[in-house]
Amino acid sequence: MSVDTKDDRSQRARIVKAAARLFAERGYHAVGMTELQNAVQLGRGALYHHIRSKDDLLYDIAREYITDLNELAVTAEQETDPRRRICILGHHLISMIASHQAELTVCFREVQSLTDTRRAEVLALHTRYERVWKDAFIAGAEQGLFRPYDPVVLKGVLGMYFYSYLWMRPDGSLGAETISERFNEMALRMLAIG
Amino acid sequence: MSVDTKDDRSQRARIVKAAARLFAERGYHAVGMTELQNAVQLGRGALYHHIRSKDDLLYDIAREYITDLNELAVTAEQETDPRRRICILGHHLISMIASHQAELTVCFREVQSLTDTRRAEVLALHTRYERVWKDAFIAGAEQGLFRPYDPVVLKGVLGMYFYSYLWMRPDGSLGAETISERFNEMALRMLAIG
DNA sequence: CGGACTGTACCGATCGGTCGGTATACTACG
DNA sequence: CGTAGTATACCGACCGATCGGTACAGTCCG
Image (cartoon, rainbow over all chains, first blue to last red; front, side, top):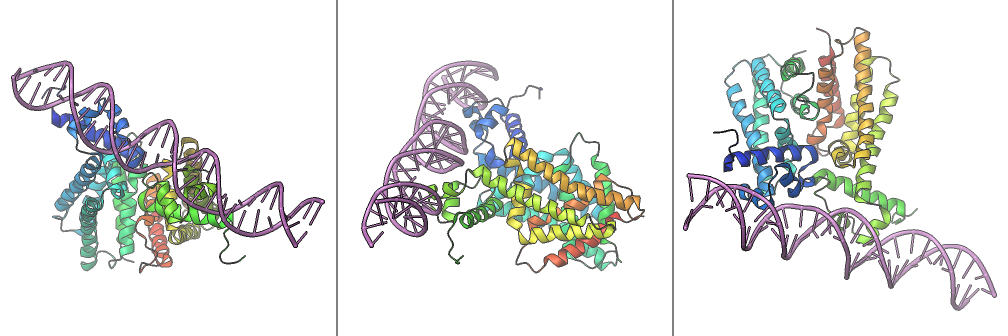
C-alpha cells in the first residue's frame, strides 16, 4: 500500500470524495461530469472505468453515510439511560457531520435527486435513524425523565442537530466537541419536565 | 377585474407560483423550462413573454420571501421584552413557512443556485434576518433574562425553526399555531439561565 | 502477450433561450 | 361607420451549447 497507489479502489475513493465535495458545494444537478473529471484529473473514459453512472455516485454517498449513522445509532441503543442515550446520539451525529461534512450534506440535501426507488430506499434509512431518536424520547417519557412524547419536540431537537451541516465549518473556532456538548445540554432542556 | 383576468401581472404570478412549487419539489437545476411551461399550460414563447430568464425566477422568489421575513422582523423589534420578541419572531417564521412552504423552501435551499452577485445579495438578507434573532438573544442576556450569548445556542434555536420547512405539511395534523407555541417554549428553555 | 487503465472523439438527448409570425382587442382617424 | 395602426399575449420551430454516457485505440505493466 504505497502512497501513490493507483489501483481501482483508491481511484474510486478519490472520485467519490471529489463528487461528494462538488455535490455538496453546488448541488447534484448543477455539477457536470466534465467538472468532476477535471477535479480528479482523469479523462472521461478513465472516470467511467471506475464508476457506472452519475446517479450511482450519488446513491453510494447518500446510502453509505446514513447507513454509518444507523450503525452508530445501534451502539447508542445499548445505553439504557435515555438521557445518556440522547447525548451519545448527539455526539455521534455532530462528530459525523464535522468529519464528513460534504458527504453528510449530500446525504441530507440531495436525497431528492435520486431515482424513485433509490430515494425510497435511502429515505427508509433516514426514517429508521429518526426512529432511534424517537424511541429514546419515548423511553425517557415512560421512565418519567422526559415530558410526554411530542412529535414537535422530536422535530425541533432533530432540526437543531441536522441543521448544523449548513453552518458548521471544519476550520471554524467551534469544535465538534463543543457543539455536541451544548446541543446535548439544550436537547435535555427541551425534553425536561415542567 | 373578472376572475379570468389574463393580464401580464396575474399570469406572471401564476408562473412564479408554479416555479416555486417545482423548484421546491425537485430542485432548481432539476426542473426544465419545458416542465414549467407544461405546469402553467403555456407555450415556450408565452412563458418568456412574462419572464426574462430562469435565473430571474429563482432570484425573485428567493429575494421576495427573505425580504418579507425581514419586514416582519422589523415589527418584532418594537417589542422590548426579549422573551416576547423571540416568540413573535418564532410565530412569524413558522407562519410564513406554513403558508408559503414552497417559496420558503426555495428561499432557504436554492440560494446556492443563484449567480454569484445575486447569491451574495440574498445571503446578506439572510444574515440580516439572523442578526435580528441574535440581537434579541444579546438583549435578553444583558437584561439577565437569558444565559450569556452563545453562537451555538443561536444556531441551535434557528436550526429548530428553519428545519421545519422540510417536514411541515400544510394538511398535516399539526397547525402552525401549535408548532410555533411549542418551538417558542423550547427556545425559551434553551435560553434560560442555569 | 493480456488485461487494467487512460484519453479522445463522439453520440443522441436535452438544456435555456430566441425567432418569426399569428390572433385578438383597443385606439385613431378619414 | 370602416379600416389602418398599435400593443399584448401567445405559439411552436429552432438555435448553439452542454448534458450524461459510449466506443475505441493507445499505453503501461506484470
